Length: 632
Image 1 (tube, one colour):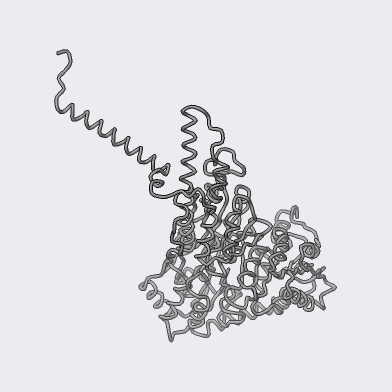
Image 2 (cartoon, helix red, strand yellow):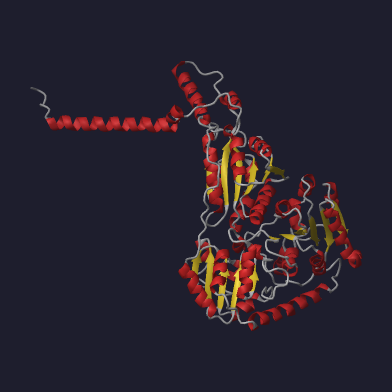
């Protein structure tokens, strides 16, 4: 009688509590079983005798996606991927710097319309790629970077080259994943390749811990329990490590779908295209600004070129779109862009962004009707809250939009007097530039004359790789890509050092083409060692170096504004001898060679055709061409 009599409600409450506790406990056990892979292992076998390894799974997916090249700088963490790819007929191209491997993959992505592939080792191998990956992100190039990593159980415990790689690459990539079991490899690589190409293309990253790439017998030997501690704790540790190993390989070699996943590409709506058709049809002075994004798949470059020629609208071409209209198109305008934009009544930004290259939109006339087309919403509306406003903003693919616009305007052409007047201004400016090329510099050769001479002699199928500041800035005004996809520059990031990698990727994609690198003597320093790569992999390219012993793009401002040339001075280094040392052929070209400049260039071309990577170390003087251009 001292205790209260429990009623039925009390029993019910106790039962509920016990039931909830039991449910939580069961749920916790199920969760733990899933995390430890216990449930998966009940239905999927671990083949402990199999000699296969995770690198084979990577290679099989890449082959199923039509990958031809993997660029790398070798490391033990990633060796299984490289060996497996080679066995399946995928060419392994090793470079002298990890950044070059990524730049080469970037070039392959741009020229092939597929995903470029690079594989590098853990830690410093990956950190060496950061600039190149960021460049690919800003240039909207689809590439897959595969990186090695410490073993799954050793990460964060002080293993060799172990750092938090995922945090490093998440801001740079559209997708990042760390493989935890071998069965994840195939679906993760397929997913990454699709994401790289979907929407706005860009880089993706997959981390491969070393124990996900090597065969069972090696991993068990390395990570298995050798001298387990005694007692209950020892048994628990032994069981945990053994279970981790079994789960790592469980179901590893089961048949999986390797085929490419669908790629999502945003498109303009029919209503948006119709509104643009009506706007353009009423325009008297329309202008098209074409950016690199207009060259992306799925629309072939030749279809875009035909569409632009049918429209007859004057075009300014930037980035990868240079060469879209060939060498001497009547609607391709190269000069006086700012003046043309002041007069234009309709401006079509086809993949062009209102960033520093368009003075953040300030060069656009506020009275103009602006049609902006871009796959990326943030790039589409860049600075529209400050200096400009789109009349029609379309988040969609620029290339296919141009084809649809042209089809909707069949029979309509831009009034011919408008592109003719702009072309006349072009000719006036280019004649003035030509006259500057004939001026004598105080010492050495006139850089403009050198560039004009190269432009006249380069083969019709040439691809031009731009890597530098002042000399390359001049080349952009003078050299004329002969067709679509024949100009490669870093893009909006303005990265120096792309030359070796871009040229390597370009020569592999277009082995029949003459690949030219236009180098500044400053930028050459980043990738001159890749002449060793060109020699070993039989990818003969030809480089012309504007050697003025100076970082001239910086010096031009620094000296008059701040009164010092500190850190801008270089030397008239014998880069041609360096090239010889790497197995290529170098030429020194100075003022005394002016009269036979064409002969020297032609001889270098013949050497390249015979299989030697060549370099023209051209000593150049100073001109006032591009005076007032800025470096920041």
